[in-house]
Length: 466
Image 1 (cartoon, rainbow, N blue to C red):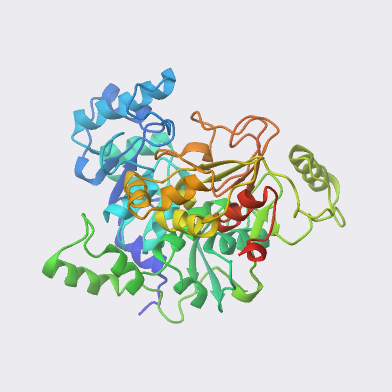
Image 2 (image 1 turned 90 degrees about the vertical axis):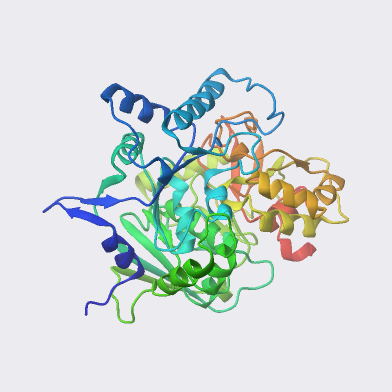
């Protein structure tokens, strides 16, 4: 029998029809929608007189544009308010499950899917959002799609898609103190570049990956897109099953046992061939931070910004342009740089585990006077747990502000923007020019590093002030 990768097994099981020398007609198990990329898709369906084929396979929530304060009041921004209202109307009209503002399970789409148990191994999952790759942490094929494809999935529950090439990234060994999954993925992207996995679907493997919690695995898969990958996935194991057991939409009783037996088959066969492989040693990974304007421009916190030695032409000019935007110069140390804002949240690091790590770190400490510190839970469930566990009190005593669930300062589509020229150390996934607000300067890091920066008021190594 042909030896297959995990990606092959899931993909092949979902091909409805193969088009010779063209894409596959590919069945989608779960479709997540939010307020930004769905309104036009629904409008086009209406114009064509077409309904939603399988509304029970679609789940909606507003997240990108929503405010993170006063969510019980009318949304002030007209466009944001209109988009959220359209999401409500469309979900009601077509019988689609909606976790709306104020409901018990409202939150960022890529946070509520896993915590409700909607996301499961072996599934195909899409959403009109590039960070849909998050769900791959469960051993699923999950990827972002455009608005026209959102329309296609609503109408047919299928998508036209060419099969990606396969890459495996193996990280073996034990992680050092203060090193998190965010550091792993920033390290990998820095090694292979922000375009190093273009055209591939990445499977993460190795003892360091297997040792991670589900929340940490989601962080890894979430940022697969930041190295150009179509998506990322991790084989399901006991950690996966334990996370899902008892969740609202997870199988129950005898069905649970049958389903887990299938899930256990979802792993890459021995001797299966990947188009490309990378191997990294966990011992070489330290707390990381970005210094430029793409996620591949990352270094160890204790390192220096790379010099221009060996760079020529457009590569050199674009590199210097990036540093100029950030206000940095080649060769200088990143440690000691003053910071204005810190942000903990987003679909990358807005889960309860992330908030716990920050609270544990800052307990009994105070943020520096020059720092504005925002903590934004990824969902109402995370917010609830943070209150129940006493984390909110710890954070507020340290000078942090806990806001309400939403994408918040990950992107400049709502009120939570970093002012022009200000520096923010962020747990989000992108540091493009203007990503967190026009002129904002973003440095990506782990929640632990963000906590350390908040306390010290400047870039620092979290291991030095444990």
